[in-house]
Image (cartoon, rainbow, N blue to C red):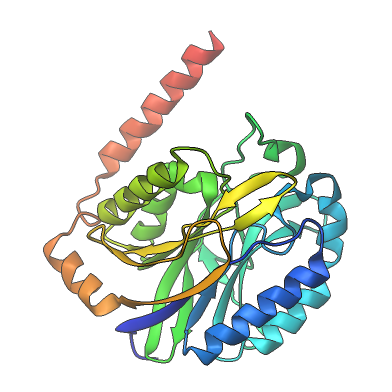
Amino acid sequence: MAVAETVRIALAQIGPKMGDVKGNFEKIRAYTEKAMAAGADVVVFPELATAGYLSQGIFFDVAEKLNSGLKALADVANGISVVLGLVEEDEMGILYNSAMILRNGEVVKGTWQGRKVSSYRKLYLPTYGMFEESRWFTPGSGVPVYELDSKAGSFKGAIVICEDYWQPLTVRIAALRGAQVIFAIASSPKTLQKPKMTHSLLVARAIENTSYVVFVNQAGSQDMVNFWGGSEIIDFEGNTVVSAPLREEALVIGDVDLYRERKYREINPMLKEERAEVIEDYESAFAEMRRSYQS
């Protein structure tokens, strides 16, 4: 397949209901169909879109209900890639805060260290303040990259989930593996400075990795907690391509110009200039920090 020059992406900023897998899948399907009608190549949903972020004690029940919903959604997704945050349970009964990509009746496989994988598993699990993810989930161990199809050709994308993009190396790894578009999905609750801080952070990730960042956040309320929405596409120069409103559900469509991104990378080769010696020094500094905490 030819290399895509332009890809149309739909931001599905929804507010899932806690534990209502059936109802959430119905909403996800409806938004997917709207995105298809708008000519989107990809539709992106938030973190834990199938369950609601605060489902917590019923995560095991939610995971058991996913299979039929995923199959039905994959069958609907003809000619569109669906990036979906969900609860994943492996064959050992271990839960992950994960994301999968569905298209044409199948789960799209990503590539990680030469292996094919079915999901991206959140790497950094916040466990402070109102967050207690490590109580329920096990962290993932790497960043796969996905070869995705569009009407104009193929392109490479990667997923990071909420806390992951607060750590610069996750997006860097994806970009070094060739990702042109970073899907950054979240369930971010509202605080006074959170929208401004998140936007600034994602602009930095886009610029430093010369990549598009597609941010999709939950909107609405769950158990008296408000999620602020504010989904957006940010280009490799830090410009906002399109944005969704704060707090309310919305479907917003934007086009990413991958031809312009490729040309920009040719004259701004920051990824090619990455040095193994610097990565080794990072590992050394990290080990020093760990030792200082243990002493």
